[in-house]
Length: 303
Length: 305
Image (cartoon, rainbow over all chains, first blue to last red; front, side, top):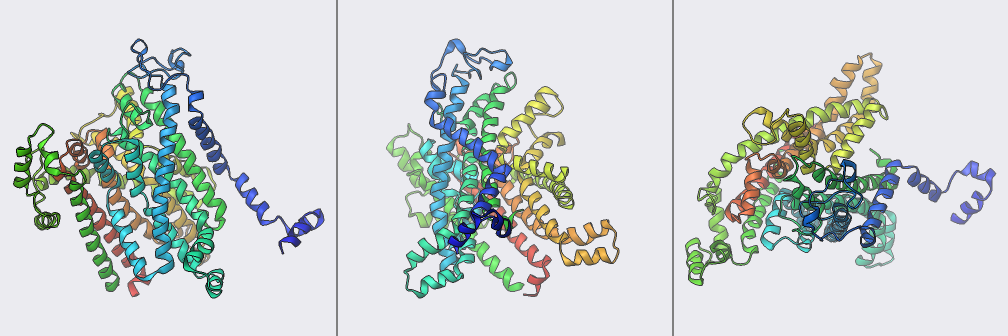
C-alpha cells in the first residue's frame, strides 16, 4: 500500500488525483501553522541562549560592582558597557537575564519530566486496567487538584529550604495532575482498538502491550501536555522566587530579578519590566508550541 | 441523579480527609517540630519542654486524630506568631479573599463570555483574533508581573489608583483585573468552543428556519446551552482563584487569607499554614462538588440517569 503510494506520487498527473501523502500533509500542517512556527523559533533561540550563556554573556552574572550600581539600559541613556543596565548590586542585567534562561528552562524541563513520568504511569494504568486501579487514580487526582499548588509549594520549599533542586523536585511532585487526566482519557480511547485486541490475541504480555501498542499511540498527547506543564512549572518557579520562597539569591532567576527590582520600581520601572517581559516571551513561546502541536497532531480537535 | 450526587459527595468527603492528613503531615516534614518552634538558640531542656507542652511526644496518628477532632468543631489550634486562635484569624482574613475572589470571577465572566460569544459568531474576524490574542497572552502572563505593570502605569505614572491596601473599592480594581485575567482565557475558550458547536447544530438551523430573530437564536437558544459547561468551569476556577490569590494579595498588600498564608510561611507559623491549606482545599472541594451538582441539574440527560 505504502509502496504504491510512493510510486504514484512520483507521477505529477497521478499526484493531482490521489493528493498528497499523509507525511506531506503533516509537513504542510506543521509549516503552515503560524503559532507553532513562531513558538518553535523563539523557544529555539532561547534554548541556544541558555546553552551558550557563557559565550554570550558580556559579564559574570554574579560579579558585583559598587562603582556601577543601577546603571540604566542603553535605551534609557545608559552605555553599551551594560546594554540592559545593572542592578542594585552593580551586576550586569543582560548577563543575569542570559543565565536566568538556564534556570527557567532547567526547571521547566526537569519538573515536567518528573511529573510526566508520575502522571503518565498513573493515567495509563487507570485507563488500561480500569476498575479499582481507576478508582484509586481518580481519587488521587482529586486529592491533588484540591491542594492549592502555590501554597503547598511555598510551604514545602520554605520548610526544606529554597534551592534550585528543592524547587524542581517539589514542582515535579505537584504538577502530575494534567498528565494523569489526559493520559487516562487517551488510554481509554486507544485500549478498545483492534491492534490492542490483536496484540492480546497473539499473546503479548501486558507490559509489552502498554509499551509498544498503547504508548506510541498516545505519545502525541503526552508531548502536548509536557510543553504546557513546562510553561506551568516555569511560571510557578518565577512566582515562588518572586515571593522570596523559591530559588534563593544570588541565583539569576527571572522571578527573583522582578522581586529585587520591585523595591526600585518607583524610579526604575525597567528593572521589573525587562525580566518579566523575557519570562512572558518564554512562556508564550512554549504555549504557542504546545497549542500548535495539539492542532497539528489532532486537527479534528482544533478549537 | 441522587445516586450520582451521593457518589460525588462520598468522593469529596474522602478527598477532604486525605487533604487534612496531608496538610497535618506538613508539620513533620521539617523533622522535629518542637526544635523548629523553640528556635536555634533553645537548649535541649527547652525543646523537650515544648515537645511535652504541645504534645509532640505522642505518636503522629494520635496527634492527627487530636487535631482533626478539634478541627471538626472549628478549633484549628493557636497561631505561633499571633498567639490567637487560627480559626478566628482566618475567618477575619477570609472576607477580603472571598470579596476579591468574587470580584475576580465576575470580571472574568463579564469579559470572557461576551468575548467568546462575539468570537464564535464571526470566526476568524478581528474580534475573534483579539479574543485569541488576549487568551494566549493571559495564559503566558506571570500574574505578579502583570500586577506590577498595572501599579507602574496606573499608580506611579498616572496616579489614578492606589497601589496597595483595602480601604476603598478603588483598592480592589487592579487586584480584580489581575486575578480575573488569570481565569479569563479558559472561560473564553470554552464559551467560544461551546457556541461554535451549538451554532452548527440542528435546532439552531430549525430556529433560524422558522424565522426567529438573530438575537433570539443567539441568546435564547444558543448561549443557554453553550453556557452550561462554562458555569461549572467558573465554579472550579473560583476554587483555584482563592488558592491563587496569594500572589495577588502579596503584590497589592491586601490583608486577606492569601497574604496571611505568605506571612505565616515566612514566619514558620505552621498551625496557621496547615489550617490555611485545609481551608483553601475545602473551598476547592466544595466548589467542584457544587459544579458537579449544578452540571447534573442543568443537563437533563444526567438528571434522568
